[in-house]
Image 1 (cartoon, rainbow, N blue to C red):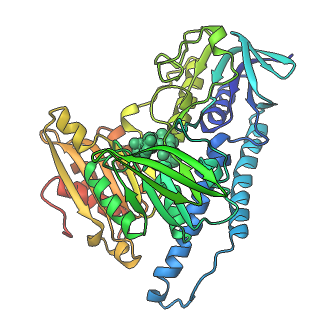
Image 2: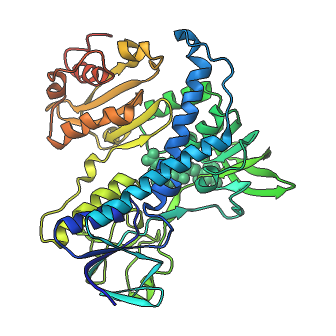
Image 3: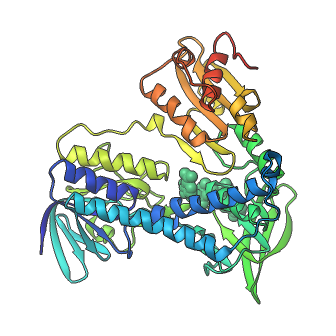
Length: 462
Ligand code: NAI
């Protein structure tokens, strides 16, 4: 039995980052992970492999649609699915081994196996019980399917199965027009599948700025994705390697069916806390099964903390990372904190979609007096040269103070561009602060500055 200052349960972006921060702060740290590799869902079966397939399929799209325009004659590029899968695996391996290296460098013990917590201060893995002053639960989340749908990860798949299909399906039905459905749906649409997205609501990506939602759906339609909106999927049956999806059109109250080779269930995720023994310990959960924590990530049981997808808030790797660092700093008696008002969210389609802060809808509902600075990528020279002029940057600022309240970008590299606005918001900047900052030409970032200018006297190139 080993004894530690901190044992972190789970090695996803929340857990491994927290373990490294704890070690950097001089705490004797171990991390328990039951998978064969470190990195959790994100590195093994989530963010990283999906980004590899998004990148590869985007290159195919470029070759098919834009190469010839630039004088690059590469007619009929062919997809070798096995090689593309191998590339994805290599990307995963490189990243998971990188964390193993970081653990060694920071002298963090990797305890291999699945953990349970018999009592505060104790973590049991296999037959061994280890002691720790503090326990951090960073056990993440799992896909939540719907009643009436049995996932087999071959024909009816979650994101995990969708990343490792035997072949590219001729017809794919995606249930849910959220982040996972649209990222993976656009991968297969680009690889040649006929992709139909069935969504319960009337808009895609619930909670996003409405103007972005509309533009995003228009662009995805142009890329070949089909949408059936306002439709509640009720069941999926499988016969002879074909799936039949049954759904109800909510407004007309009519029943429909559609056949598919693969059905991707992308209807959300739920906290993964199985086997930890939380009920016996008396750890309080919310009515949605999340671990209840206070502002210092402490659960209802002294000495046990929780972060990331297992607690409340957006299920995002970077939110988990920030909480992981904050809780480490709190345990080391420093002042760790996370600013939940400035957490960016990104959808890694092409174009990318990124947002931070308030949407127009939220500001209207709160009765805030705000102004809008908007700039289309059509006015951005770099975007035009790169066939990436679809989309816009929208900055929302307080009418009286000019303070930035939110930003919404759909366009090239939106996921990177958003961070200049995040930094500005962290510093409480006004739109004019961004507008007066010199931006290199020609860059996509100029579109952000132009949107900031549009909050004042006006953009130059529109
Ligand atoms: P989501 O919550 O983003 O979207 C689920 C969608 O399914 C919703 O639009 C919902 O209305 C719809 N839906 C639910 N029941 C339905 C039914 N019976 N019939 C038709 N539609 C139905 O969930 P998603 O995409 O599974 O993602 C899970 C989590 O993972 C999210 O919190 C997301 O933020 C996170 N994630 C983030 C990524 C990123 O930051 N790029 C990438 C992948 C996942």
